[in-house]
Image (cartoon, rainbow, N blue to C red; front, side, top):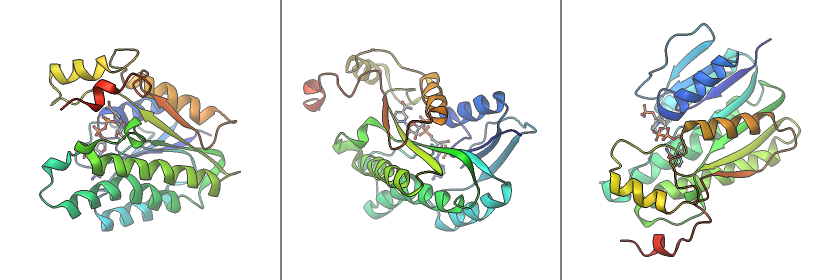
Length: 237
Ligand SMILES: NC(=O)c1ccc[n+]([C@@H]2O[C@H](COP(=O)([O-])OP(=O)(O)OC[C@H]3O[C@@H](n4cnc5c(N)ncnc54)[C@H](OP(=O)(O)O)[C@@H]3O)[C@@H](O)[C@H]2O)c1
């Protein structure tokens, strides 16, 4: 029987590519999406919409999950990435980041508690900035740090049933609004010096989903950006 995976934020970008990858591998894919769903219909694909910053929508999503069958894997990928300066309401700004990155994975994990298959696996997509301060994106960084710590607590709680690991991406795929100067600056602050592409995260997910010896691991997939000389990064405007 084919395995079943839930991927959040799967309507576009990395989540969409992950969904396509696991469909190609013969998995049953439950793809959560928010506003945009670019996934083509597929007999093994179930799509569920929810704004994870909305508590009622999250509750509704969670209620649907146990009815879909047993799960072998979940990838908590959904993310919002808004600079603090763009926030007109600080409370709403932090609430949105905390709900999407911490509350939603917690509620979804609880909803799946009775439907894990044997040897199941959970991957939380964090960021190298969970461990690096960044005054421009403090709400985002705090929320990714929260997700990471939550994941490690779940590695304890679900031990023996579900292996839980964290991926910290670095510069994987720039956003359309990132101009050339920004891209060059970021890549100059990495050891590999290249935009890594979604394939790097797919490789890491494949490894963590299969690696029976790993739980509670935080894996950087960042082209060495975390250990690059950060003197320049600290003193840029
Ligand atoms: N791209 C990089 O270089 C990079 C670097 C470091 C870490 N990461 C992490 O890697 C993961 C994938 O990166 P990405 O660039 O593909 O992320 P992304 O473009 O920021 O999108 C992630 C997904 O989250 C969904 N999302 C946003 N707000 C949501 C909400 N309120 N409720 C539900 N879903 C919501 C988006 O859907 P909608 O657009 O429909 O809202 C989107 O499908 C993310 O966790 C990101 O933080 C990426």
